[in-house]
Length: 415
Image (cartoon, rainbow, N blue to C red):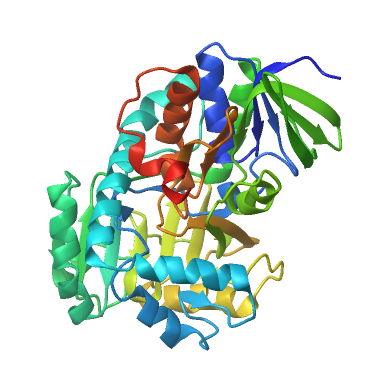
């Protein structure tokens, strides 16, 4: 049996590794148990934008209507795969109940808090840990080709400004003059100068290196088989043997509901499947990361490459690489960009985002369990929220004052 650790973390993605690093800084001994390799999940293939601009939750007025209309559209940007799945439909009912203005505004405020805290902390976090991941305070632009949708964004923009998130609208002709990568037809853009970008695979690799350098133990290919309470902590049985710890942090992303079920915990999270394609850098790229609004395609250019990504598909843990959805990324980009792809297609990727029923993360003590903590349900914003999540986990586990109110993210809200 291994020596006892202060904290065992199940999940070696961006949330688990960042939380482990923050706990090491606080003087705790930490061991991360990862079923695959560090950062092999949605930490790897997303578009790497750091986005307080995404404070508005997916659970919004009108979302359910879109989901129903798009159910039988294979390349729809938001799609619920029609199938018999009681867990999915129970989740959808809970999600639908939250698609109202009151819950939308409440979740937006809480999401803005954690997103802004993370964005503010990112530069020092990367510098302190020596992580080189092509971070740049680039801002992010949302580009529109449909005037009605552009004008309809005004209400959300006003809510974001009220929360302290800078928002600027730009007329299409002015935007096109400054952005030669775009084709004609843009009617306007919404600019978020407070956003940033990084290369997520390099970020999570840097977290893993920093975690090990700080004395953390990272055990890969170590699937957890069972978790038991002990008199003063937890015992975890894995393919690599048994590990004891005082506290356990469950940070397994979209897989959290499966392990939580064995712990008799309710984690109302569904896997939201996303896709991306990574290329070598094209000859002409947008000057800033952008979201091509009507097609829900995110475009990010780094010095080292170029990525198209996004889409949200609720199809369970389906492991197929859906070429229809990959091709939709390229078709969408071709509507907006003169050069929509790079000369070499380097990687085709899919992964599951952990989407909670209210599109808010679950961070805090697990209800009814003295030594179990949760950090999951970040949806599409795990990278964006990673630093503030790590700091909140550290403060809660160590009993320190928190930098912001943890109540909106408490797992007990679903107990």
